[in-house]
Image (tube, rainbow, N blue to C red; front, top):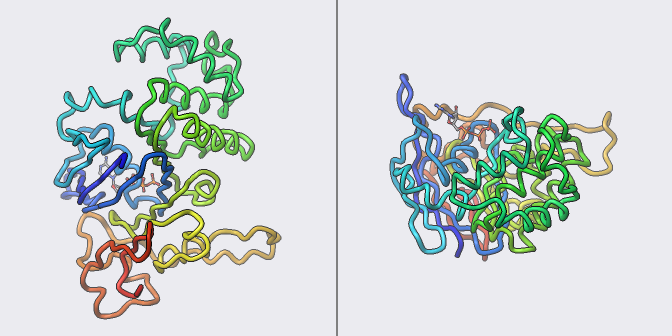
Length: 316
Ligand SMILES: Nc1ncnc2c1ncn2[C@@H]1O[C@H](COP(=O)(O)OP(=O)(O)OP(=O)(O)O)[C@@H](O)[C@H]1O
């Protein structure tokens, strides 16, 4: 087992009270698994990804644990997390490619990052060049400034850089967003290849665009309002989703072969509850077509088949 997250709660302190962005989530990611996280904006995807690497000053670890390769990560202790970051668990944050320092050449930027982790650039340079080549980039990109590269090239550099020390887990947050379709495909392919080559053991790929996950993910975890709704193999999520929210998410996707003007995208009516004062019970119940009395109680995230977990009272 690569990653075991148990009843993890991470809240944000705000002047209006605590935002319960991650409110007791439990799941596992196996060795070699690429797990995608899907869900509407604000459901807690980014918070979950960040919580595994670095809590920012407003985030508070309220409870629960994260165990990576049998070692519990000291989430609340930023100094102690340093030892795990980058070497064992690495993050490609949202907007990583836009956040590259425009005044630093790519090679210099990588050198700085490595030296912050006590690794000599010269020692990894041959491997760095090999991996750049693998993602279709010539080693001469190391002598270029970020502005000289396209979005897709930058994102492939970020992928190589973030996995250079072969971490056990890579978390990629919206790594294919803001790219054109062919660059999206190249980055998605590179993610899978990096796992297949063993450059990274397991991955969590976060996106609001569930169709991206069909290209890369072995399993998909669907989140709703700081809770987990469903986790299953990607094929099962597409063909036999069980949670009413997952069914709506899948139903909201355009169907292959539909003509644009004929598409009737259903969308999902209503909005998720506020995470400042989330209601007790199932958080989806106000929007759920299957709501009944029992939903006043929070449904457990329980196993319904091998590799398939669902939190819904209406699923038998
Ligand atoms: N710094 C912060 N301070 C207070 N609340 C925050 C902060 N960052 C996020 N939140 C709140 O936490 C909840 C979860 O946000 P998060 O960014 O994790 O969701 P998300 O699913 O990744 O959304 P998106 O797809 O828009 O990135 C939301 O209600 C959001 O408003």
